[in-house]
Image (cartoon, one colour):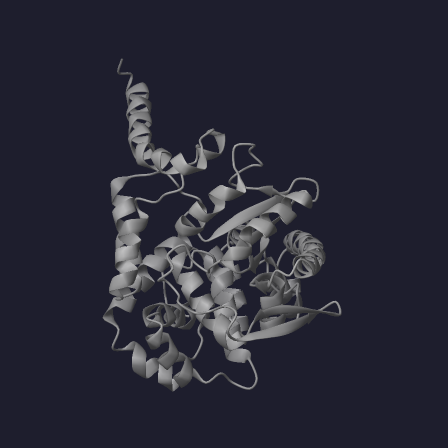
Length: 400
């Protein structure tokens, strides 16, 4: 692990996440434990990065007796809650897959338990807060109705009586998924019709290279691991890798047998114009988890100067606070610059700029408006938002 100005709690987490553990693990662990670890901060970081299973397994196997017993029990409890949630979501996932297939809706499950099986051969080896499906866009109306019938609420529509299925085609153009929450069993599923909001971000056909994963005796359709790899790098980069659990998945790729053909992966990433994202993720894995990169990766990375900038921005997010949604112009411009430098593809950048004018208005689900006039709401929404911001600013400044 390279030397970064991380607090000892983050250094301990990164040491535990190295796979396999290096020969100096015991010495480094002693050094960190002598630094008076703040265990409350350590546990907060574990939860913030959603790495409870990863940390629990490493501590249980290698250093259970070298940390306070109370802390180990807290980590054990966090992992237990994660396992219970995973099992509950996975059971419901199997039911929903059967339901969608019974209504002739082609469905693929990605991330979540299927990725856990592909990478770790254990559905409880990684944390997931929801489970993601992807379906053909023309089947969204049917799937939306089925989710309502199962007791789920569309997290955007909130089961509003003003939202109708004839409005769904409009939303298919400006976003890429809907979230569905079940208030009784407290779980969330997402139904996608493409991987990312920007259709130019990752241009792969999810139905082109399929496989199945055996979960509880049921064959669950999913994307082949060779295709999932490109989604993993693109997804992590799109979120600036602000959760370490995504880098844990990348790190796990190096333990797969037989080893991956990284030369083919690099060439394909260039064809998809996600090579910067690929090398960003690989550099972070190298420097944070002390992972040795294949020679093909090391040879190519040195030609990508932009990747250094992308890596620095990711480190800022990884070590920064979670959920900092307060808007300011500098933060927005930094975010836009980061997004634009992820890909050098012109169509991607043009679509990024056009998407700024296609934001989903939060008040739409409370607005009774005919479907044919939906575009009017989007035209006036920016103006009304600016007016509200001015009113809020005046109120905070005491201006009347």
